[in-house]
Image 1 (cartoon, rainbow, N blue to C red):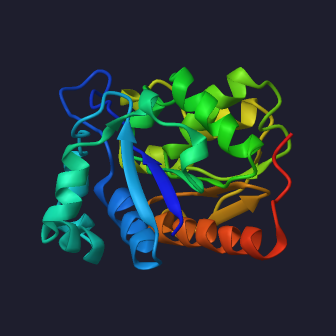
Image 2: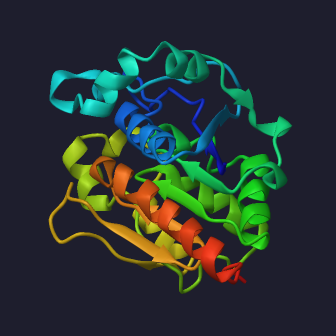
Length: 238
């Protein structure tokens, strides 16, 4: 049975406001159940361990999804979510894939976390897929700092500057993720219409643009693992 490590943010504070952020709930629940329903074991971790903060906006009625409702009726999933493992206790050797949900939180902690950055590099060097969605690709910034040139020419996506502006949080974040990825040489692509599904796969790196891309990004990871199983190791990123 394949095992995926899902890394969640521990950060909840936005800048210049009393509003909070954290994990975007649907970006956790949709991939979680996608992996679970396809026979995966899912292990949850975060930089601080314990229960990650959840962005209050992701709990609003207009953002409730079928996977969110399933989560609220699933005590086992709630227990795992409330007791995420400390990120520094885990190694790539124990897993088949790595996955980062979003929420604005990763812009702060996962983008600067050396343990997370090294873990990404360990997965890639071992020929194992790394999936990220929405603001989850912020974790790639630290990996690229540890291995300069990592993202140069890589076809990826993430929450766009246009989407950031439409959320009204532009003044409450430290930087725009799309711009930061482009500055590192990433070949950035996105959907023509904001907030619609878009996924990019480049080698072992799978990125999704926004909340609606969460399930498709997880499915792309699963498909890539199937290809790895049939064809042998995929060439890791340089």
